[in-house]
Image (cartoon, rainbow, N blue to C red):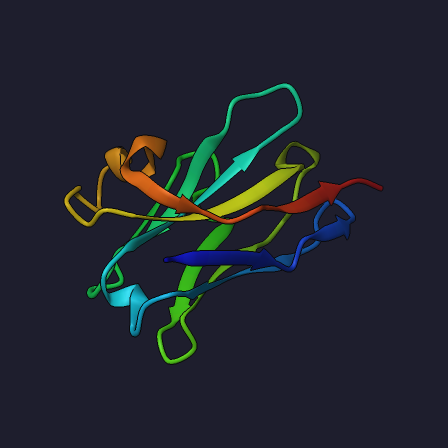
Length: 131
């Protein structure tokens, strides 16, 4: 059973940075078998995909809304995926989720950020950007 646990959220001032972590477990070398996506859900809004990193190749993809400020990376030895968020804005306030999903989608198009392709989800971590 794949399990994902997010951490690293918190309250940060506009312009600040955070690094979110997604610890994966349940399978040896789990990051070699799943794409890992980062999603967020702001109050009153639908959940949206913001970034992903593919299985063995580690190819990354970003939503246009976060490109240039978000960086996804991974440490396969620790089965952890990171989401570095810089130049935080109030509109980045949301619960951030990581998810593990099928590798049968192109990792370089927005298809990879569609929720339906992800089977396992973490519980989320709150990010609040406010002065």
